[in-house]
Structure formats: structure tokens, C-alpha cells
Length: 255
Ligand SMILES: Cc1cc2nc3c(=O)[nH]c(=O)nc-3n(C[C@H](O)[C@H](O)[C@H](O)COP(=O)(O)O)c2cc1C
Ligand code: SF4
Image (cartoon, rainbow, N blue to C red; front, side, top):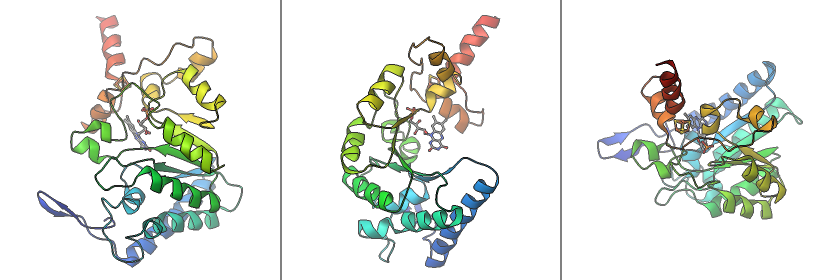
């Protein structure tokens, strides 16, 4: 299910959600957040990025609806904002509640930075505690265009620094910057310059789960992550997500 049935070269895929489906999903988000809170998690985050359901509603590339959930940005953001209200009602004020959104889908006619800036403003007004900025979609992986995916194979991050600066100028909600950061120096610069309040990393922790402890111990050499996504493809193949290079080094040491 999604905002619209997608037309692909192999025919039509998926099912356009009915209004009843949408209401059910909104309700389920609220219930899930309440379960997470009850289970003792420190907070919840809506995944509004990367071409998954909420991100598809935001994106004109995926969302071709002509009802109250499609068309204008206000309509495309309706699902996200309804989920935000539902979750806030379910968990109450004071419980940390974050949203991850795309700065850009990198898809023709997709959700773009100007739209993100407006949605971020709406999220601020809706009482979100922090916004995590990311970009790209899973479609980039499926179509063999990794630099339009959420895990770009570029080492020249942080990928969304300029966008984060634009966002910072407009909203005061804490910002978390995701994508391509590999060193303590750059992380500190981002914070000191006020570009972001927090820095998120993914693949450096796949390569080196104790990276932060190493930096804290005084060894501040940057992450050795090559950003080549080999770990991701191992996961897709069903071999478990792991850094293939570290594993190869370990095997060499055993040999
Ligand atoms: C193996 C793998 C799994 C991922 N799974 C998720 C996920 O479940 N949710 C999410 O928001 N991002 C996921 N991502 C994307 C990362 O959170 C992050 O946005 C992306 O890798 C860019 O950050 P990085 O350059 O620090 O790796 C995943 C990335 C990789 C490589
Ligand atoms: S396989 Fe290793 S080096 Fe390559 S992106 Fe994944 S963690 Fe980084």
C-alpha cells in the first residue's frame, strides 16, 4: 500500500490507500509510540524520509492523489502532521519525539529542499523536539543509482550541510544532521558553527561500533569507512549487515 499505485515498466504495483487505510495507519503510529513509551524507550522518531510510507506521501514522485492527501504540499504533508498529532496525544508532552525527513528525494519532480523547509516549519509549530535531516530514497538502491539513495557512495560529506544551514536560519528546533560525516573535527565544526545540534552517523558505526569511545579515549583519527555500501548489500543478500573490509582484515589476521 502507498499513496498511489505505482506504474512501473512491469505494470502497476501496490495499492492506493483508501481514506480508511490512512486513518488506520495514523492510529497505528499512535499505538506504536505508546507501546514504545510503555516499554521504556527514551523517545520515538517518525521515519519520514528515504522513500518509505510517510516520505512517499510527501513526494509528488510517489503521491499522485487528488484528495486531501495529495496535490498541494499542505495536502501531501497531511499524513505526517496527523501522525505527529496522534503520537503527541498518545505519549503526552515532555516525551522526546523526533522526525527524520528528506532534504531532497533526488527523484524527478520529487520532494525538494524548499518543500522540506516549509514542512520543517510546520513540524516546529506542531511541537516536535528535533528534526533529523537526511536525503535520498531506497529507490536509488533498487535502480542502481546509489548517489540518489539514502546511503550515497561519496566520501565528501557531510552531504546536507548547506541545507541544514538554510533550515537553521528558519527554525529553532534542534537539528540532527545525517549523512557522510566521518570525523570528530567535522562533527565539532558543525556543532560550533551552529549548523546542527547533533550529528548522526550510520556506516562508521557498522565499521567500528566503538568509534565514539575511541574518539573519547583521545584517538581522534577519522572513521575508516569507505562509504561503499558493501555492508548494505551484504544485508540485502541475507548475510547480515557487517563491514566486509573489517571482516576481510580479521580473516587475513587468522590466516
Ligand atoms: C545497512 C544500512 C541500514 C540502514 N538502515 C536504516 C534504517 O533502518 N533507518 C534509517 O533511517 N536509515 C537507515 N540507513 C541510512 C542511514 O541511517 C543514513 O541515513 C545513511 O547511511 C547516511 O549516513 P552515513 O553516511 O553516516 O552512513 C541505513 C544505512 C545502512 C548502510
Ligand atoms: S562495508 Fe565497511 S567501509 Fe564499506 S560502507 Fe560499510 S562500513 Fe563503511
